[in-house]
Length: 342
Image (cartoon, rainbow, N blue to C red; front, side, top):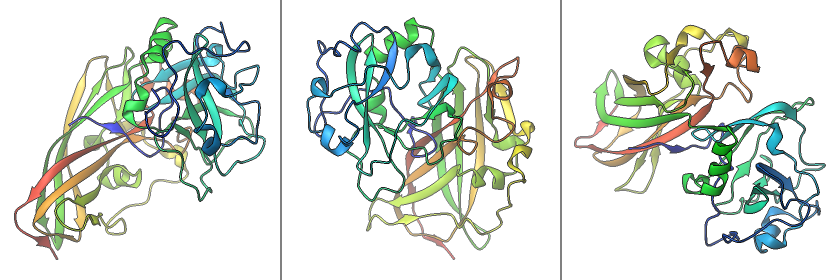
């Protein structure tokens, strides 16, 4: 089963707007004079700062008043990783909002001057629910000097706008990233409780060689501490309850300071190369008989822009490849034929 984009680190901007809930541009929609004719993919904020995302989503996309200059210009984009939905910038970009709008600060993505969809900058302290289907940028920490990586969240279907991807490919800014597949999943009794044995495959679809976390090269507790692995079992037959591994049982602390992440935890995959691994997620308390959706996370977020080892372009991009940053999620149905519990 293929991975979708997770919640997590990281998360999507370049996609088509979903029908039902927010406006989508037609094939002929164009940006106004200030953006019309500007080549490449750009991200614009609105002229009216007080106009929230919850308000803007009810308006036609063509009626949203854009600022004269883009917040993120095409010339500032180094690459867009389509698997992680991560924008790599040539120079750090400053925080976009002058104040935090708890109802969301809208932005509009354009491709060669054509409006494609609306997204929103979203505050993690907001008690409102973001507009359904609208891509988010919700980084909780924005350094004073700006960010060289902008992480984006959104539904995988929202991230397939061919107009945007076509322009990125034409301009040499598109990176395919990785493909992730969750394979066989089995719930077993182990020790005093339950465990989940699973297999996953990661394939490098990028043109560059990539360095990726490898569970065969690291203590699995470190992998878990990075919020990876089997994170939940959702009961499909019962009340929809969620079982989670106990994070306090047997888990080691990550090395401190964070710049001590071991490069030996990563495997180098050439373009087109893949790896298949089998691992065990321990410390589930109770898994009764039934059907479950097994949720898996894989990635290396590196605490915003990366642990010290992965932070900065020179460290992220060794001469023979680059460190893949991002997080993917995948799910797979698993059947438990006998209760596995304490």
